Length: 318
Ligand code: NAD
Image 1: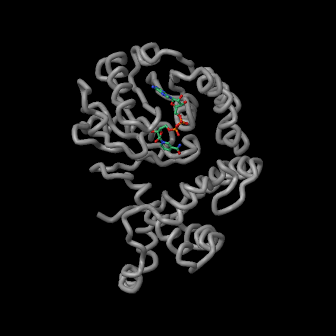
Image 2: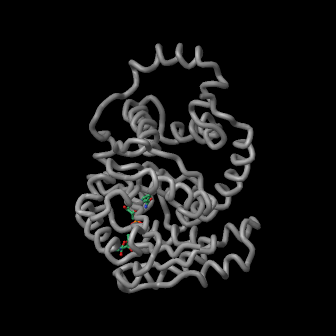
């Protein structure tokens, strides 16, 4: 098992630590905030609960997960001799460049460096590194222990070897890696997600439907299928001729603006930020958010089990 250092113990960092520690890796978790570091073991304990409830981990595996975790107050201590470093610090290019350079100097010569950045360029983050070929994007989704997909992102200087190692590392920890062959803003998942988000906001803005009904058509309509098959599998099943005909009618009428939605901007300016401020498109009492999140993780893990069963049927055509 490889020693893995994780830089940043926030929302993503503690979840990524759980993923690798439960799979037997010694994990060193670093954060400059004492509060974030102290909170991590308790957050991980809570994160393990749905896995225990569904029998996906044994109580021994959960205990082992916490035993494999070392909290570090210094970056150099955390990285010394590490085989792999995963950066999950705030989304700021200068900060990440500085952290990665220090990590590369402290870790094992030739260690693999991964960044969990949501949107920053891997090529830009690698600038200033002695070994830019060893940096690769590894974009986990929140909650990291639950959502299987990890986008492996190749920067201009990333070597094939680094891509292969990152892929193998996350696959061995039970994740579903996908390869972004050429980095683009938003990688794969956020591009697809925001194509849908733009149209959802447009439909509400134009008064064509209420926020509730836009959400319901996804939750109780085509979104149900997306848990089990992607848009291209779906097009194959429905018939590519049908998809082609619908595109001819619909595409010219879709929102194609390249600036964020006015509706979104007005809400943000009014301080209506969603669950975190108590109000967005819906009203959010604090306990409602917590209740929903707890139920969400259990439900997601059950769906993922079903989806993976169906996936064994699928052979892509060349
Ligand atoms: P967060 O604010 O929850 O956590 C960031 C942590 O980094 C904090 O605990 C903070 O104390 C720590 N930190 C601050 N300065 C640091 C430094 N110099 N070195 C190391 N740690 C430092 O943020 P997050 O949501 O966990 O996001 C972390 C990264 O993951 C970002 O790049 C973000 O874009 C990406 N990401 C976030 C999500 C998400 O849904 N939250 C999903 C995928 C990727």
